[in-house]
Image 1: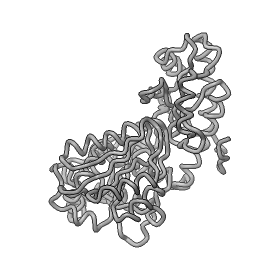
Image 2 (image 1 turned 90 degrees about the vertical axis):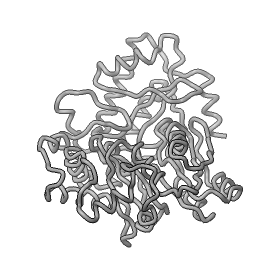
Image 3 (image 1 turned 30 degrees about the vertical axis):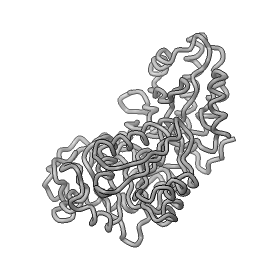
Image 4 (image 1 turned 180 degrees about the vertical axis):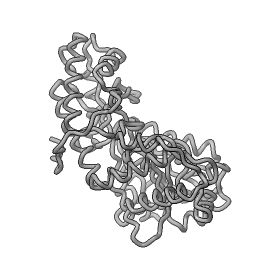
Length: 400
């Protein structure tokens, strides 16, 4: 059984005002109409009003980390989440440093690929499609290779939907005198990442994830000591976190043209996030979304890739039904016709698909998702959603 959540929606959230489908994806995602409305005005990137917006954005994001000792700062960076991951790695890892990359899906492997591109040494623990990297493995790798200076961990690996044990990893990293960098792209804002409870040097996330803004920038939250040490280290002019930080602190401006409308939308998203109860409130809604949706899909015969212990409230991976009439492309179109855009799977060993739990959706929407899945199966002539024995065998490896 999934853990019971404490919060339940008392009033259904408004449906998308323009009638567009719900995005059951890990970002971009369905946003509130007020967030969209915030983009209807133009802003001068150099103007004092916009500089004040940037300062407010930075303050509000820092507040979500619990940084009461003023040890951290927030640096917004233009571009997608992957831009920010590259900026973090290229700015905080010395040119003679070495990174232990923890991978259990596409985003850990992308971090390793980034290390190749920027010319920094790295080693890799690759757990495959879905097994979580554990603290004892990290400790053993660090003891075996004294050249490793940093570890990068993916907070929520959306390839599979697994919530990785970042606290356990952090303990192993610092017990062995190394530094932790966290890719919290799909988790920050809904899953706690309090600097007083989980130690790290820097983390990155994006506007269009759990804060429920729109795409256009990400942000790096890092210790000021690390930001200071990053001067002159970056491999890239535009991805230099120290240079962006220094310029923002001196002038209040972004170094290059900022996504002004996206920033305005994000501020509105942050206000809605606070009104919902911050990280705890947002996380509770997502957890309830997951619980309602997973219970309903299992009742139809679908099986999740992950056991309940590892299921994140961000996105859930389901095995494709083994029924000969099931074809994912057809299922996708039928779901879209009913107002829901789902996500293809990224597993290499078995066929799967994913359903996101984040964005402007609640338990009422998730019940409709389950009903849409049931109707779609009926239309395909699929009378059972049970997966193949091979898929169940793969899952058994996780339990072991």
